Length: 318
Image (cartoon, helix red, strand yellow):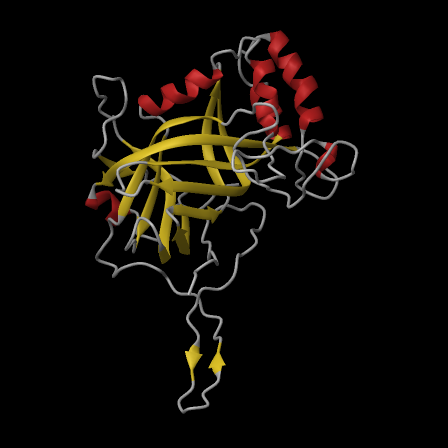
């Protein structure tokens, strides 16, 4: 059985997510000619409730996924393979990922070089700084993982940790540290996912804190996709997460901060033009964005996991 359906319990009040194919084991009738019946029930792929830890990966390096000659990491968020002028994908040219997958939505990658010629030149460094300072400690916690290579039923929690990470002499966060689960975080829970050839993939809305100069943006990312490739020994992982962010929200938030007037004018001019996703048909009011990451093993303090039980999270606020 290959478990490919994701039962999502995200607390976000955002766009509905499509569910991928059921992984519930079929019920069988007794007798030689027994008919296989699909009950439609979804399992929770996790060990007993007293095993709260599972395997946790901390993203110790996070950066924007860049494009080179039309190639960039990301995901096909709108289900289209778009070219300029074909009427799909807001008439924006899609990219191809390094594995040759077409239809990749990552419009922000095309905007990065322009931003880096302005007062926002430090945007990439600020993102990594927020990781090293403990302000953005994204974790992927996997329970019920029997093999780093293949496992047809695991549960996943994707969210923030809190704590002050210890750095090695190379300036990189050390592996094997313990952190608290952020009790105020909007954790994403995936009840049934799988690992195939070392790759964990799931879909969900999520949130990310992004700093652009003096602007601290708490972005709601919709149509989200997360992918993590786990090393055979489980001591490292790489991947990317991607989705769409609201352009009107970004512009309204940027106006609140003391950002250079020329940069504000540029963003107000450019962002509405580069929108490649839509919150409703034809709106083109969202920008696709992708982040690459490297991850290392980490742990949660058991007390913090008990304070935020598996499958529960703070209610979303309007």
